Image (cartoon, rainbow, N blue to C red):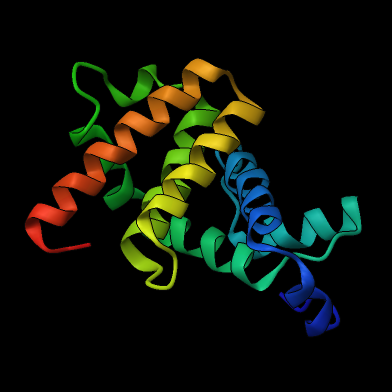
Length: 147
């Protein structure tokens, strides 16, 4: 997954890298190949540099997908995972991965970024939905000491 100059990869902000991760994770919902193959195809087709943080999110979501989905589904309150739009599910997976495994990002930042992505890529209603699910997960994590 060598995408060129490491310095170029570090100059992107985390917001932009979350958007990159969203693109890759969303695209992977329609593919069965490996993360490595998806990266290679994306570089060839789009001539892009994937940021280090984006790569961390993409690989992390792929490695923990079942765990992330179980946690999301446990906090849906009357919904089933298959009723969630694919874009909202992708945003939730990335945010929950970030909440659980990225220690240097405050919970409020992860949730806010996910809500903004939902508003940008889906609808305002999706933003509110994402906020509710992530808020529930964050509260449960605080109570259990996982936060």
